[in-house]
Every structure is written in C-alpha cells, then in structure tokens.
Image (tube, rainbow, N blue to C red; front, side):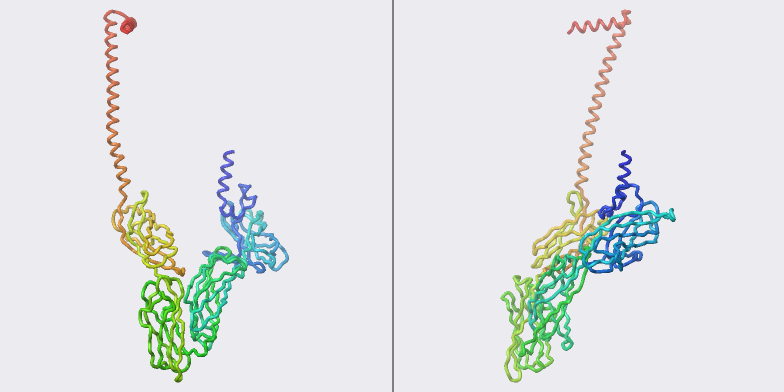
Amino acid sequence: MKIVFVVIAVLLFAVPASAFARGVSSQDLLEVTYSGPVFLDAFWTDRTSPPPPGEFLEKVEVSPGDGASVLAVTLVNRGLSDITSVTGFLTLPAGFRASGTDSREVVATSNEVVEAGGVFILFFQVDVLDNTSVKEYTGDLKVNYSRIAEVGQFRTAEISFPFILTGRVILDASATSRLAPGESSEVAMTLSNKGSAPATGVVVTLAGSTGITETVPNASAISVGQKTFDIGVIEPGQSKEFQTTIFASKSASETLQTMNLDIAYGNAYGVRKTTTVPVGLIVQPKPPESVLSVAPADNSSNILSGKIVDLNFVVSNIGGRPLSDVIISLKPQSESLQIIGESKWIVKEMPVDYNQKYTTRVYAASDLISKPTSFDVVIEYILSGEAKTETLSLGAYVDGEITVRAYEIEVTYIGGRPNITGNLLNEGNVLALFTTIEVTKADELVAFLPPQQYLGDLTENSPLPFSIPIALKEGVTEGVYPVTLKVQYKDNLRELHTFEVTQDVPYRPDTSATNSSANEASSGSLILPIVIGISAAVIIAVFLIRRKKRSALTRTLAVSKENDENIESVLDRQIDRSDDRK
C-alpha cells in the first residue's frame, strides 16, 4: 500500500502546476497512469496558427458582440509517446457560436507531431454574441489523437476547462473648459472608460498640443501646471476628472487646439498598455482692443522654488499696426513671488513684426511649491496717437528642488553578513518620492548583483540610511573596490529621475568569527592536558591497586606451600582473622 501512495504522489507532482490552477479534468486526477492531452491555458488571440519560433501569441481583449474571434486552447501531451492527428471538438456555452454557423460545437485540428511532454495549441474560431456577459465560462472539449506507434488507432480525451470573456478597455477624454487667449486657464479634463473591462493603474501624461486651424499655423496651447496624474482604476462606464493649468497664446484665439494625453494602463489580462488620446480645447476670441501677446520662453514657465532663477518671456505685436513709446512692467500676483532683477522696460518703437524676448530674475518662496502662479505684464503704448494700456497674464508653475547625495558608503557586517551601507541625503526642499536604490556594478567585490531595494520617501535635509546585503566574491581580500549605485525617485509631478554614484568602497574581512573560533581553540587546548592528566592518574591508581593485590596473593601462596596446606585452608584462616579484627 505504501508503494501505491508513493507512485500516486510522484505522478501528481509530475502534472504542471498550471494544470491544477486551470482545472484538470477528473479523469486526469483519478487515473494516475493517464497518458494523453491535458489542459494548460485558454485565451483570446488574433492568430489562427502557432507563431514563428521565438515568438509568443499575443493575448487580446474580446468584448460582447465582437463577433468572429479566436479562442486559443493550450494543451500538454502528458505521456511517454509522441502524438499526432489531433482534432478538438469544443462544445461552447450559451452566448458563443462556431463562426458563421448556428452550432455551438466548433472544431479545430493540429497535424503536427507533438513530442512527449510537448505543448500544442488548438485555435477555435468562435462568434461572440451580443448578449454574452463578461465573466468566466466552462468549455467541454473532446480531443481525438493518435500515438505515433499506433498508426490508424485513435484515442480520446475529454476535458472541461475554464475561459474568460475579458471585455475591452476603451478610453476617451474631454475638456469642459474654454481657454482665454494670452492667459493661463484652469482646465478640467475627464477621462472615461467606455469599454467593458476595467482599466487599472491608469497614469495620464500631458504630452503637448497642436493647433489645427490652417490660417494660424503657429497657434499653440501649452500646459504650465501639473503634467502627470495617477488616476488609478477606471471601471467600465465610469469617469475620472483631473485639473491642470493651460496657457493659450494670443495668436491661438478663435482656434481649436488639440492636446495629446499619453495614457498608460493595465488591460483585462493585467498587461501594461499605452495609448494616446487627443483632447480638443477651444480658445476664446481675444478682446478686440488687444494688439499684444505675452508667452513664456525657454521653459521659463517652471520656476524653481528657493533659488533666484531666470524668467524669460516674449512680447509680440500681433495687432498689425506699429506701436510707439511702449513701457512694459512686470508685477507678480503673489506676495511669495519676488522680482529680483529688472521689472520695467522701455521700447521706443514696436513695428508690426515685433517679437522680442525679455529676461529678469525672480525668487519663489517654498509656500508656492506645486502651485500655479502668474505675473501681470502691464504694457502702456501709443497707437495712432492714442494712449492705451493692456494687462496681460504670464502663467508659471513653481516647482521644488530635489538634490540627492550619497555618502559614507562602506562594507559593514550585520549579523555576520556583509552589507553595502551608507546614507542618502536630499539637499533640496521637497520630498523625493518612491525612492529606490540598487547596486549596478561591483564586479570585483560581489559574486552577483543584489536586487533593487525600495526606501520610500526621501525627506529633505534628513539622512536616510540604507543597507544592501551582498554575497562576496570568492577569494576577496582586504582592499578598496569600486561600487556603482543607482538611485531613482519621482518628483511631485511623478516624473522619474535617476542619480548614479561610483565610489571606491573599503572592504575588511570580518574578524569577529575568527576571534571566536580562536578563543574556542585556546580553551580546548587548555582543557585537553587536564583531561589527559586525570586519565593518567586514574590509570596509575588502578595499576598500584592491582599490584598490591597481586603481592598479597603471592604471599598467601608461599605460606600454603611452606606449611604443606592447600590454598583453601590458608584463605579460610585469613578470613577468620579478618572477622576477629572487626
């Protein structure tokens, strides 16, 4: 009986783990000697034949009402013989039909020779009907096949297996706000999932904009606020809203601008996908008296907090008429925003094609970090002999600074195991989010590179220690070895940054274990002579006692011989004397 249980256990362990996870037929589990096809996986794909060597079948999403689709059923030849001439007869559940028919039985064949233990795929062409639900289903599959050694004889395997109608993620976006020309506008955007499967881990990045009005080829609208948004999960039929700040130039007035949203998400299979969705933005007409425009230049829409930085902007004459005696004044709208450099400029003549960059220096306090702000650009001028004044808005976004430094890097033994230890210091003024560290190069020191470590948020001006366990290379001796560390983190806009440092790291073998062994050896060397001495003393004592007894016996034998007595009489007298003494 024990032998039977052992055989059953061995055969069960031989079944692939995925087979148990996917539901092997009862025949496979009960008949431990079963040799034939067993189920491995089932998914929807866009092919009707196996891919070329080295490539994999792509899993595609399928929704109710998609019509003609391909269900790939992966099987394994669990047996000791090669098989061929495989034909699968799949009985579909309600909601599915064989393509182009009203039958719920669909047939697929494979004429390739499947080696013992080999994997093969049956491609079933299925129509997915409108009334089918997104959920898991069960298919009943009968597989006819022939073993190579049994030409002309067919065997049959009956398998019930699960498959899922996944649904599909369909993302769309819209903007509900209009843009004011020459100003920064708060824009609410809505991202909707119009599909039948949830979109998971959705991250949206504002990629850029394009003017689509032919008469204004240089029209543009740019994002000056947050550009990356973690949306999370969007269930089918649901929407998520987020807000950003967008600046539209004066020249973009009365145009439709398109801003691309780069979207990353997980589909119904959990596979990471990317798509680009355009959003239309309507720019309102500019006021009829406006003849000037102001726009940021050289990426000056981002101002670094806590430092004096350059602010560049461009003033353009878009009115089609020359201006004279122009005075340009720059004023911040927030008390936490200060102009350190020049704030007023005088232009004697401003012709029709005037387009000039102006530069000053500004300082933004830390309370503005991660907030949009703006400057008022007040322009006084003479137009056709009449004095006019315009106040235009120059949008900006205040960002924090992250500067990471690594120091005190060394090899330290923790619990008897070597670690590369050190400290990270964020010398900026905002958190470094989702910080990770990893050893990317230490060829002379470690046997293999350790995995990446997650450290969390790196607070400003607060050291963060790290400890990376390593496996030392065989034969490493005391010395200094080059080590390269890569630190990655995200800023408050969720943009990824990478910092690398290469440093000569001192290594000294751990002597604590060696000293302990030496102490044990020293104690052992002291104990050993003591044990030997005691053993020798015992041996000598036993030897002397035996010698004394042998002498007494010799004297007794001599007395017996001298008196011509037998030994028993002599011994009896000695025992009597001993009793009298007592």
